[in-house]
Length: 381
Image (cartoon, rainbow, N blue to C red; front, top):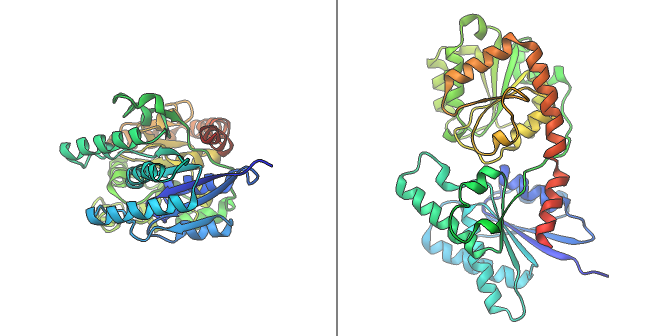
């Protein structure tokens, strides 16, 4: 009988953002007869709790936090080396920038310390630190260098889009290490349309509902969406309500901005909504106004239920949304274009239906979880 390959997934935080969802999907969908999955993570309980429900073992890295603390990073590296030598995984699959660098170093050191042992080290690039426009030029150079070193130390890397690969693939010695594997999703259960509309818009459930699922921080561009709504003619604003599911540090600022723009009852901040994708059936239009993205799950989810999508042309989004074929692409940080796209869909109901049908064909055909898992397994082997 063939021995199972052990895959050690490492991720910085144990909350449940996009990178954690990726780890969860892989760890819980690898064939049980061929693979054993173990997940190591730092602070946060949501990911370990969800893995426990699926009987996937998780390990807490006690010193691992998102913030960089130089002396603590040495302790994390030592902890990782001990873990790798104890677990002896066949593959170390690293996710997120910080654990990517530390894990690659720890994996290489463990290989030197253990005779006849050398795990394969794979890093998935969910996004690059240098793509954050709020960073200074010096910080961006630092991130380019640190990401390049991480990729040099790894045996292979996964980029979640062609754009993600091309952003760094021009640097020396790493292009051939990077393979593009798109994020993928399964069909999922949703609430009945009327139930979803009542949850989203309450007394205004008869209005056209524009929906965003988003963490409330600057990169997600919800402030740009609010500015776009303020540019709409009054007769258009009266027809719509914009619902945002998500929490984050920008919440208070966005609520004040909404009031300052006079949007009043046109905007509802729903806060954190567990499994917010269940509410997608209640919306008429999905809006993703991000300043930067790598390859967001949210447009795949909206596409799976057949929602017409307005999204910014950043990261891998144009690899899913083809402008005016299965959705509308707008430039980032451009509220005027978002407003024009909303008005276009309001005036062309047939286009809402056409874009919804087309994206609903695109997602299961090209961005399924099965395709993602199969492509990743090939790299493990």
